[in-house]
Length: 132
Image (tube, rainbow, N blue to C red; front, side, top):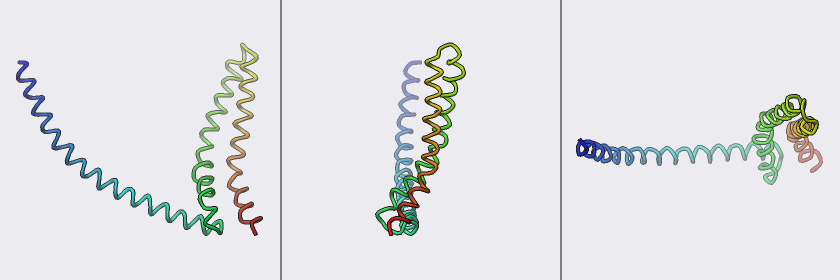
């Protein structure tokens, strides 16, 4: 009984080796195509932000602010506000320091949310307006 299980496992291992080699070639081709697509996409975004801000030196900061900071700040700040409200209203009913900690968290995350949402507008004003 043990010998048959061992033989079956050996056969499955041998068959799986061929499968790994076959999928590895497919993965390499897919990865190369994906890398080329990402590179083309970044070149297009670089052109777009260079035209938007008027100089090649400002495109990366504009890209980071508009594509990363602004969209991802909304869910993270809402999560932080929710945690602050839990501290303030749920745990703060028993202990006063939790209530103050929750209130502080809410104020901090609302401030971060407002700054992150206004940052692209401020950046565009400074770069295109005051640069000359």
